[in-house]
Image (cartoon, rainbow, N blue to C red; front, side, top):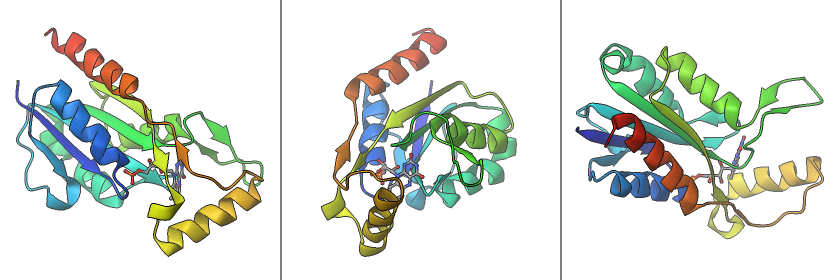
Length: 171
Ligand SMILES: Cc1cc2nc3c(=O)[nH]c(=O)nc-3n(C[C@H](O)[C@H](O)[C@H](O)COP(=O)(O)O)c2cc1C
């Protein structure tokens, strides 16, 4: 089985998770979406970091552009985020959080994924560009959250996802 991993990461946590998934599944076919050339695997694992409630547009574009090709393949999806539970905003009643991000992926994919996972990410203020740091400050103020670094990445979650895929592949 030829396994291919494609991801979008801005600050590195999604890259780290993607590379760890690839390693655990024994493939070195892992690429940043910005360097992606072609769908070459039989099982494609596609993941994105979530910013402002959405996966990166190039990842969504890949899912829609390659819909025909992906229909014939097995496709697993993952998101990396901090809001992992389904939430409903009080202001506009809009839903967000991990399950909603996954649903958006599934909608564009237009089929049930082979496997899916919501991973906890990492947010380090000192690593952020100015615009993101400002946005984060505003968000923390608005929801009355303390402004501090967050790291909820877990290797155990990567193990679970890799194991789920292995079980489904029967290897
Ligand atoms: C400006 C900004 C906006 C974010 N928006 C969301 C969001 O809407 N929902 C969420 O769950 N996490 C959000 N996050 C958290 C990121 O998903 C998390 O930091 C992730 O690990 C980043 O992945 P990366 O290191 O691969 O870039 C946001 C982070 C930043 C800096």
